[in-house]
Image (cartoon, rainbow, N blue to C red; front, side):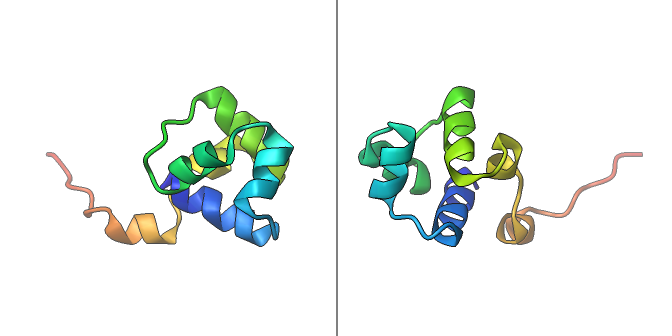
Amino acid sequence: MVGRNLRRFRAAAGLTQEQLSARTGFPQQHISEIERGHGNPTVLTLYEIGLALGVTPVDLVSPDQEAERESPPAVRKF
């Protein structure tokens, strides 16, 4: 989910991974790993990426429409 959100916000900002890397100081490979779901970003990393993209860290970790479709329906316990 974080990777999808990162990719979506980066594309909306019209940035390549290399440009985002230059803005954040994180290696392009790290940006790529996060986008592919292979990286494990810290809260500080999410904060720095959010600043560079003009979004909050919460925006990066919030479920998007695709994630909501993939989630199983909630089960109520009585």
